[in-house]
Amino acid sequence: MAVDETAADRLAEYRGKRAPERTPEPVPPGGAPQPGGGDTFVIQEHHARSLHWDLRLERDGVLVSWAVPKGVPADPRTDHLAVHTEDHPLEYAAFEGEIPEGEYGAGRMTIWDRGTYETEKWSGSEVKVVLHGSRVSGRYVLFRTGGRNWMIHRMDPPADPDAEPLPERLRPMFAEERARLPRDREAYGFEFAWGGRRLLAYVEGGRTRFTDGAGRDAGGPAGLGSRLGRALGSRPAVLDGEVAEVEGRETYLLADLLYLDGRSLLDVPYRRRRELLDGLELNGARWQTSPWYPGEAGAVREAAREQGLPGILAKRLDSPYEPGERSGAWRHLPV
Image (cartoon, rainbow, N blue to C red; front, side, top):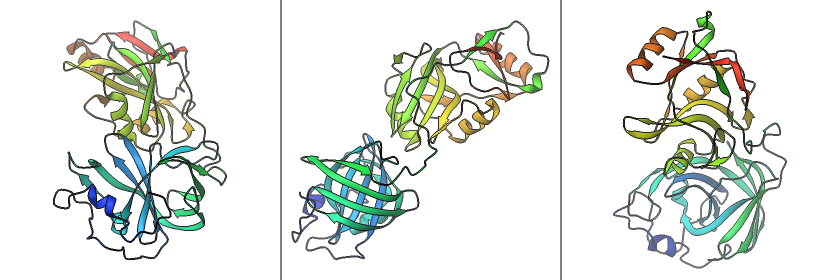
């Protein structure tokens, strides 16, 4: 369907894909749509089979819609794919809910941003708008590249001029082997050493890739990448952890946060990085945020011994993250 089509029933395709008795989505009756204010936009985060964001612009009584797999770009240096989908009813601008399994677009739908917009140009191959939302504001252009495939480009300067790009690859920081606990134990945080496979996870636009302890591309447990990407949603992050067996299941145990929301955390003290990681509440079927215990060396060592773990880690609370280094600020101690 062309973007500028003005047929009487703009929602026929939408209704044809949905059964009102089986989905909580609004499914208005047939006929010409009733015009609204004409300037509403909404971006919905859609946890369907693949996480994506749906950009919808009110036009001629419907919401003209694009699925944007990596979200609306915040920087003009990066264009994102936008797949034109069927027009949606105006009521959809307020919709949040769970589309049942087996139905078209099954999964959770939430409102990520909404507001008003101004039109600078609207044709069947190019749409220029100015968005005024709480999370996204500025001039954008959508341009058609073929069929339903479009691209979306930010025309204004970066939304956050100080934002740093997600690192391409980092090597993890390593601990020195020590036989004894540090004397100033209150200056350290203590963790379990799981004895697993070290992986760094790079999450952006709901997608995840991994590198190993040598900084090489690596794979994680089956299904981990897409699920972890969905858990973080639109928040770009670099995570440090290890894959180990927990209660008979391969699990990614997260222990550090190296980048978040356009900011490198390498120079941020370990204590603060752990607080930020805990705040993300990343605990799922295939991943867990590994616990840490400031100053509690004896209890952690005893618990590790009882669980049959190979050791514990002592990490200075004020230590930065030193990629690729084996640093005395981190100590690996046997149990």
